Length: 153
Image (cartoon, rainbow, N blue to C red; front, side, top):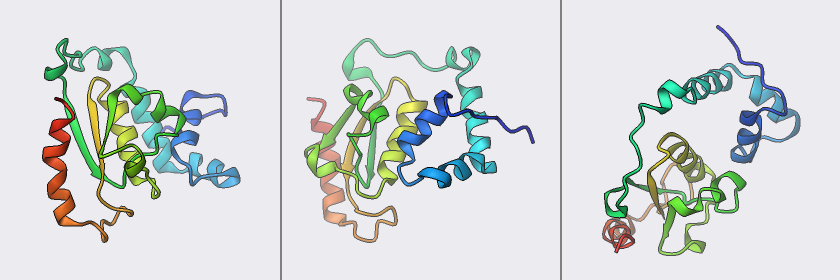
């Protein structure tokens, strides 16, 4: 297996350090060297190649025609440097404060969607405090859909 050597100055090291808030110090260095992470980095490098990017759908001119993805998860960390740089593509319901992610899972899901669907708009709703969704309230989840739809109005 070909492993990608990542230096501390690489763009992926920087992005991973921002998104992977639980990896710090030597743990982060070990995390970067893991086979799974190296495979993911290799995949993202291929995704970034021009011939792949040219095949992605272009951004719709009209706002109502743009792709919208609802993320019902643990919320989103809008203070994350990389996520905040994409703030124009993110809407939270009911408020930014009530979508605050204390688990990290929703932020990681949002990161992947923002990264891989560069023209999509995200609609974020916090429906749980943990990625296992054990505390999710079905009634609240049912309320999310019509309210996320109203964000476009």
